[in-house]
Image (cartoon, rainbow, N blue to C red):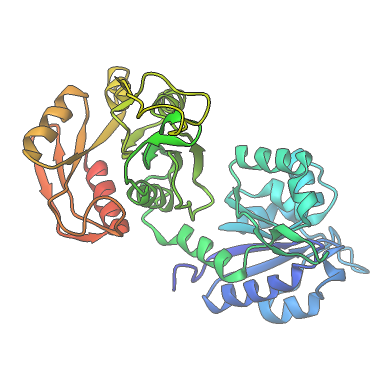
Amino acid sequence: MNNLKGKHIVLGICGGIAAYKSVSLLRLLVKAGAEVQVVITPAGKEFITPVTLSALSQKPVVSEFFTANTGQWNSHVDLGLWADCMVIAPATASTIGKMAHGIADNMLVTTYLSAKSQVFVAPAMDLDMMAHPSTTANLELLRNYGNIIIEPESGELASGLVGKGRMEEPEKIFEVLDRFFSSKRDLEGKKVLITAGPTHEKIDPVRFIGNHSSGKMGYALAEECAARGAEVTIVSGPVSVKAANPAIRVVPVESAREMLAACEEVFPHVDIAIMCAAVADYAPRDVYDHKIKREHIDAPVIHLVKNPDIAATLGKSKREGQLLIGFALETDNEFGNAEEKLARKNLDMIVLNSMRDKGACFGTDTNKVSIIRADGTTLDFGLKSKREVAADIIDAVLSL
């Protein structure tokens, strides 16, 4: 991987036991050709020595505002301008709180406040600290400021307890940084809404009407857009797949009406909306508030009502300059049905899947699509991985 070659990275290290992992992260970054400046808090030096960090980075480690005995000033402003990105790993609850509220009492926080580039934050602390409302609120503030939070893992902690709070492994943090610098960044500054997965329409507390959608295609699109620099919100039905890029905001929903409400809230603020979810067309008219027991009644008759058409609803409020992309999964008359949906829903482009294509559609890691634009032009693609298909779709969106 050479995406990090020549990049200027500020590595912030706080006072936590996970500081030992920062040595591995530093080594990976330097090996990839990055120029790394370590900024460590005074407490951080109790866990890992500046001598070790300086030997690996080939740079003096910065910790204090002034160099002892010489009066030399370490300029946090210059560091903020120099950096192509800043990553704070581990980030303790104390430092996260200071960053969130602008408490600039050490070199690391002042450097963060001066940073002009993307900042990544990898929290590490005990599970109760991680779950505390003050910590979760501070992390949400940092997200709102535009920072990317690299979520900690669950596992055994230094306290001996088991739970969420382990700093993400250095290799995973390295991958996040590598992805950040790897793509074309041709969606920089754009906001994208994506829907993904199925919807579940309740029959009773334990049963629902749904479909086999895994959400893999929608999440692949979200990853591709985030890698290209977009601010991505994914409104997701119930799925097991998770977003790998911490820059992706996930809004979980269950039913079609919940998905519509979430989309209507986000849609006015985005540049591109991609309706990839497999939304149930119908929902039970009546929902039982208790589990239906077959011993007590005959097989129930379920009366269905139409769900709202999310893409068509958004299409009616689409503003000039916004792009609205739809999906069509068909079993017959594929192109005719897709073209009808394209026009009726006021879409700019529709992505067509056929259930007759082996290796495509629900549950697979591959897909085969045709893309139909509003001007009638069509693009056909062979069977590819869903991430490759996502790249093809986004290239086609950008061509609009």
